[in-house]
Amino acid sequence: MTLPRTPSFRLDGKRALVAGGSRGIGLGCAVAMAEAGAEVTVVARGAEAVETAAAAMRAEGWAAAGRALDITDHAALRDFLGKAPPFDILINSAGLARHSPALDTRPEDYDAVMRINVRAAYFLAQEVARGMVGRGGSIIQISSQMGHVGGPDRAVYCASKHAVEGMTKAMAIEWGPSGIRVNTVCPTFILTDLTRPTFEDPEKRAWIESKIKLGRVGEVEDIMGACVFLASDASALVTGTSILVDGGWTAE
Image 1 (cartoon, rainbow, N blue to C red):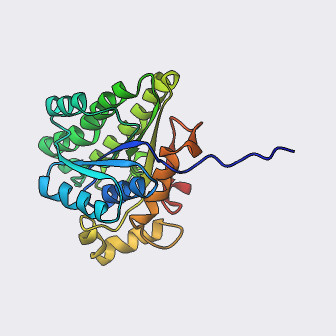
Image 2: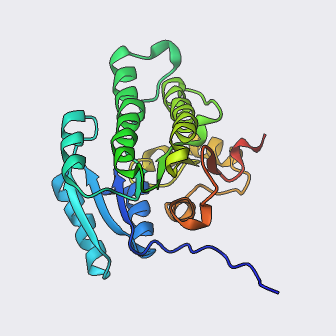
Image 3: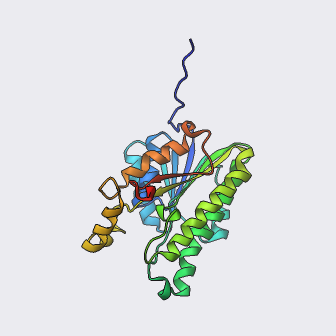
C-alpha cells in the first residue's frame, strides 16, 4: 500500500511580499513567512520601521528586506513591482479603521478607509498577480470577521471588509486558471499596540470577550499558522474563501 503524504507547509525558495508588515498582525505574517523558509520583503510607509523589522528577522538568520512604500500610491506601487522579481506570495495586512456611529460618519473618514482597505488592496493584488500569471502563487488579504458580520460604530469598516471578501472571490474565479489562489484571513479583535486602547476600556473589552466563544482576545500568533497554510502547498486546492480566526464570534 502506498500511503498519502501531507503536502509541505514549507516555503523554501518562495518570495513573499508582506504589505503593512512592520508591526502588529503584518509583522506576525512576515515572521511566519520567514520562519517557513520564504525570502520576505516587508513594505510599509515608514522607512525606519520596515528596516527595523527586516533587520530583526535577518538577525534570526532569515532572508528579509524592507522597503518604504505607500501602497495607496498606485504609480509608486507599479514602479516597485515592475522592477522587482515576481513574488510567489502576497500578504496584505495594510488597513485603516475610523469608527463612529453611522449617522456621524464623515465623508473624509469614509474615503480614507476605502482608499486603503479596498482600493489599495485591490490594485496591490492586481499588480502582484501580473507577475504570478504563468507561474501561480498565493494572494492573502488580511480581512476581518467584520467582513462577515456587522458591528456597532463600524459601518464603514464593515463595508470595506465585505468588499474585500467579494473581490477575493471574484479574483479567485478569474485567476484560478493561472494557478493563482486568492483567499482571506479574518481575525477577531487582536491585541496589538494599535488596539490596546480599545482593550483598556472595560466596557468594550467585556463586549468583545462576550462575543468570542473561546473566552479570550486574539494574539498576533493566532494569525500566523493560517497564513502559512494558505501560502503553502498544504492549501493547494483552497481558493476564493476565508479562514475565520475569530474564536467563534461568527458562529451565531
